[in-house]
Length: 283
Image 1 (cartoon, rainbow, N blue to C red):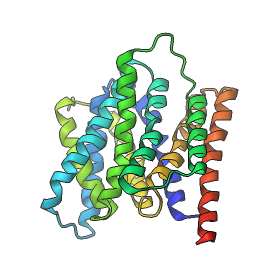
Image 2: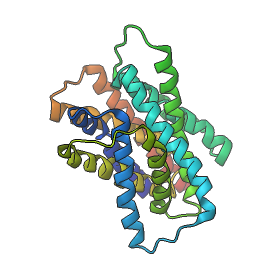
Image 3: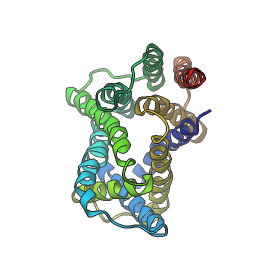
Image 4: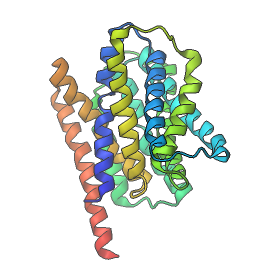
């Protein structure tokens, strides 16, 4: 199995803890923008120390690119996603967020010339159907604003992968992440409430370390080896992890069709790995 697939799986599993951390932090009375600001700021501090230990040299000529990257892939993504959660529900927000593989496949084709094979399409459709079953939205009347913002959050989520592919051609993944998260935190700062309960800090640190600092480094590293569209499809394991953790920690039950959806997502990832082995054997 290609190392890149394993790294994406681990990163997506960590991203699956976002809902757990959010649920715990909302208990301290924090708003979504404050949570995301501290997530980005603490992660930036961790990344700065990490990169400094490896001999960081700031490339001023690359800062405009990372300002653009941080604005779309951190600032807009965080705000769009968390605001969708605020005005609708977590289920609807996650469902619309996972329109990202569709954007990634299309953008990957036009920007990188990545082939859209019949197997890739089948795995993509399988993963999306799986996500539809897993999130199990139960909305009586959907807000048009929530739908638009949710779909835009999916686009910005896809843009993260596309821009990351461009970034790691010139910088190490951890350096690219440092600049991106830094600008993201800067853009988020005006929306944040800086007064937070001291008791919330351990949870904010956990949020910044696992699904941000470590997960993004693993994902960026994986993009050196596998296509953006493949990585996005494999990353749909995230809602499965989130549901399992919610069951284990908060005793939330899984419906039968959610279990079927989880199986479809995992099967879609497995098919991609099998296709990769076939392509290798034909080279």
